[in-house]
Structures are given as structure tokens and as C-alpha cells.
Length: 450
Image 1 (cartoon, rainbow, N blue to C red):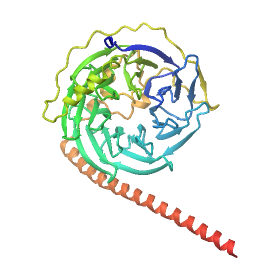
Image 2 (image 1 turned 90 degrees about the horizontal axis):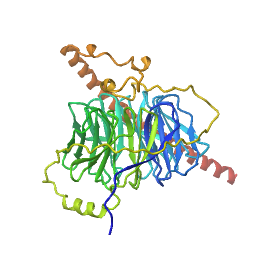
Image 3 (image 1 turned 45 degrees about the horizontal axis):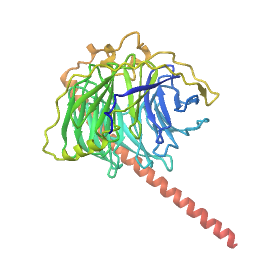
Image 4 (image 1 turned 30 degrees about the vertical axis):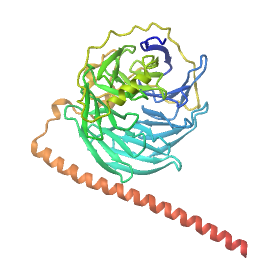
């Protein structure tokens, strides 16, 4: 007879980064882990004992997001240096650089078929790239503030994005239009993600909330207020029945979405937790934060109950069921007294960049969350915070606000026009290339005949 499922267990620590961890992602085969950091490096960790980790040098500023391609043959990264890079995840770590954004890039996301890459930036745009030809395709403009995250739906037909303009937008990748808009007037979403079957999206709120929206009926299904700090990242379990969250309150929380309740609070990090991700099979998850540590956890709680969960899930597939808005108090934190493992690192290129030390800048955090972070864990860089006006200066006269709103509307029209022109230029370039190839073939044929 099968025993009861166990609690999550902390398996390993990975130490090698010199500053806060901003992003983590498992390779599709589950044998490697990629991480990005404030220290400007990517690192590739192998799960085999005694195996080396590889440090990739190339970005000139904070690495904000990393993700493996679906086949695992490429690794994409976004950076504050305004570039996106594609890496070959081996010991040499060669990369190619993409430049199109005019401000820091906040996220990268591959489509499920690996053909496209979506990037979100503080230039208020989402850009989509063709991976086969490794070229820019088109931009999506409608956000009026920094775009923090953009993710493809599992079928690739939609993109969800979140912005500091306090909206979450759904885009149709076929006609390049915004087809849905969710507004949150309390705070903004730091991170958004589709559930595995593409029917719902989860948002990680700067106002300490986690929300689940059903995009089929445009309805808020669940609203969790379980964190005492801003929520920075969420990750769905592959079954779609659990969601794990990472917060500036220093904890990870695991939510049972079928029961609509909190089931675990995990405390392994010192200081804010910025990123979390389930492995592709769901048996592991990993987290990273301001303490520059990467923690690898074994899930355990889902292993023996998947069939029962799927049966329960089928019973709940009707629109009239009320949203689950109840929370319960978290269970006591699980003490994990495992030995710290340090993985040997090796650099992949001879080029070196100045190290950032142990500093964690306010750039990756929300300005509203800075007061929640302990001064011993976070040190502000004055040059990075200089573009954020003090609270006392943010109040402006109503007439000026109206004028600015009108200007923003005009700018939106201009950006839409630019987007259309970009698409036309791309089509024109493709046609010219085809013409040149045809001319070359004709010229070769004429030469052979003569």
C-alpha cells in the first residue's frame, strides 16, 4: 500500500554567484540548471556530484532573466545592458547578441515549439524574434510604463504581459493585437505565467497578492493574500494543480489551487526571494534570491496523489463554481538542515568584467518594496536609483496630468505606426533578399549557358 506523500525537502545549495539571483530555469532533460544574477554572469549548474558549473561572461550589466529553449540546445538571457543573448549551453558558452530594445530588458520566453522568443523591456514594448532565422519580427505596443514580463501561452497563440502601468494584457500573436486587459488598481504585477493548459494566468503582485485569472470567462478565480512582502515570481506545477510563489518577505509558499489554500511555507533564504521555478516534470523546484544562493528542493508532496488530483480536477471543470478566496494560516516552516554544497566554477571566456561584489541594487526590486528589505541584505546603488523620483515629487497638478495623458495617447499612436512600419520593413527586406537570390540564380544560369 502506498505511503502518504511527504513534505518538500531542501536537497542542495549552489554557491558561485557573487550577488543576488534574478532568474532560474531547469533544462528540459532535468539534468542542468541555468541562473542569472546581479553579478552580470549566467551560470550553468550540473546536478551530477562533483560536476563543474560553467560561468558565462558577455553581458555588461545585470542579467534579469534566463530560459532554456524547449529542446535545451539554446539558452536565452535578458539584461539591463539592453541586449538579449542566445548561448550554446556547453563548456565554451558561445553566444550571439540581439539588439532592438532601447532600455533594459526584463524577461525572455521561448514559445513551446521553440520557433519564437518574446522579450519584455522598460522601453514599454514586447518584441518577438524568429529563432530559426535569429532575427527580429515585430513589436507589441500598448503598455504605458515599463513591461516587466511577457510569456507565451502553451499553444503559442497568445502572449501575456504585465507592466508597471498596473495592467496585464493578453495579445494575439496572429494579428498582433491586444485582445484582453486585466487592471489591478492597488499595485502592479511583477511576473505573470500561463497555467499548463493555457486557460488561466497567475500574477505575482507588488501589493503582496497572488491572483489567478480565467481568460476564458475574463474572471478573477482566486485571490491569495499570504505574503507580507511583494511577490516577485510564480511557477505552476506541470499538473496545474499547485503554484509556488517567491516573495520579498523571504519565503516561498506553495498553494493548492484545487482546494484554494496555502499548504506550505518554506524558509530557506536570507532576505528577499526573487525567482522560483518547477522542473519540467515537477519533481524538483529551485529558488534564488538576495543571498546569492540557489536552492534545489525535492517536491515530494505530489508524487503519490497525481491520479486522485486529476480525478478531482475533472469534477471541478464547470464555470459556475465560485472563486476560491479562502486562505488558511501557513504551516510551520520546515527546518532543512542539509550540508551546504559549493559547486566548482570555471569561466568560459578569458574576457573579464568588473565584479559587483555583494551589492544588490534597487533596480530589480520595486521601489515600494525597498523599505521591506533589510539594510544588511540590500545596498542601494545611488546611480541606479537616481531615475526614481522621491515620493514627495510624484504628485502633479491635475491639468498637467491631463496634458501628459493626452501626450501619452499621441505617443501610443506613434508607437503603433512604428510597429506597422517595422513589420513592413521586415517584409520588404525578405522580398529584396528573395529577389537577390533569384537574380543570382539567373546570373549563374546565364553564365553556365554562355
